Amino acid sequence: MDKKRAEHILDNGVKVLAEFLPIKTYLYFPVLYSICVWAVRRIFDLKERVLAWQVWLEPGMVESKPDAFILNFFERTEGVREAFAEEVRVKDMAALRKAFAGLYPVCGLEDAFLLALFQEDLEAGDFRKIADEFGERTARAIEDIKPAGSGQEFWRGMQSVGMEIASLGIHVMSDVQVRKLILERIRKKVKKDED
Amino acid sequence: MISPQSPRSPVFRAFAFLAVLLLTGCASHLKQAKFHYSEGQLRTRAYETAQAAASYKRALLEAEKEVRSNPSAQAFTLKGLAEAALERWPDAEKSFLQAFTLGFAEGEEWARDVARLGLSSSLDALGLKDAALRSLIDLVDHAKFKPARLEAARRFADLSLAAASGLDDKEKASALAAVAKTLEKLIDGDFACGFYHYLLSQTESHREDYRKSFEEAAIARELGLPAEKVLRDNDLQIVFISTKMKERLSPDEWQAFEELLGRWTRKWGWRDPLTPNWKKE
Image 1 (tube, chains in turn red, yellow):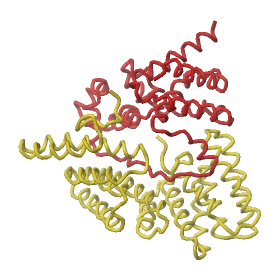
Image 2 (cartoon, each protein chain N blue to C red):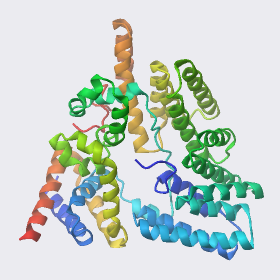
Image 3 (spheres, chains in turn brown, cyan):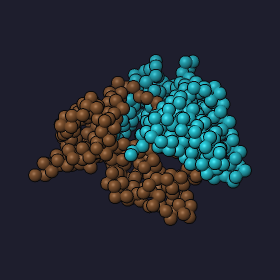
Image 4 (cartoon, helix red, strand yellow):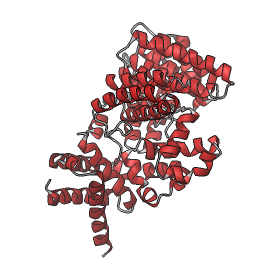
């Protein structure tokens, strides 16, 4: 894969984000990372689907899980296991169920946008913080992205980034490499703007 | 997480959108209401919540004019959808009930199913769980519009499983058996629908019949699931079942199960029998 080209495309993506979300830099990584994940699966046309009035019916998942499933999630998920060791030991299901609602989408289902949104906490191993702040932070991210969503240019720019990234064959890079590359480009742009 | 009955839920928006899109034979207020409602959905999709709310309010005003000048099941359905989008649940409930009172014309089965689904959302949001459940069961049994039947089945399973978790062991076993029976009936009618197998797998997990749960989850994965989130949840169900099976089975039985699991997971391209391919390394 042409790394220079990938950097150039990501720089363009950061530029679009900086134009539409100038002070919401914390959203750059989740948006760009999600686009790269979707690009691997050749998904570029979300906005077009909306514009074309093609709404796909997607039945949701069953949210009512048995205690055994929730306990198993806490016992098997690295980091989460250690953070909630006491609740698991005494089988405090009320506390575990509450934390599960925030941790399962991030650490279980591994939603790309959420993984990136909580990356710092994941790296710091602060799983309690993720559980406590999940609702508030996801709601704020949705609110903050609103200004960008009002313009067609933003979606076109993001779509273009996704298509170009996919054409480069980004799937050959590991997830860690992709994340590192995106963060490098964002930091470079933010530093340049600060200077 | 966004609840299915929330106006931000993709499922809710999708049903509501279809309701608007498919309504036909409309007067000008109804047309205007449809236009504004669709605009609200577009805005919601673009995360423009304030503008979306404004569009829903305009849709509601137009729908109200329509029900005054030309009351019809369609008009009340649209009014109910706009009210539900604005989270005015008691009003939405009244509108959907009014739509049923007026009756749907021939060829409007889909609209009736959507209105019924909207009604069950309103009842659930108002805390009338039993009534919501009864409405969903009826929808599961009689809906002709497949997307409405799928979502009704999911909500029926979710509500029933949540309710069963609060019962004593005997009552719980009986309640879960009834849920499984309903889902098996759906599968008998449409075996190729992976989503029904997913729902049954989830239910069998509550019943601690892990082998059956595994079989249903495997069939669901083979037949396909309607959303990435559901597919991943189904995969994690398979991982969970595998760990439970290891605890419960004798070494010989576990070896046989492990071979079976290995065959399936290799077919699905998993990194190992407990690691789906989408899991981060």
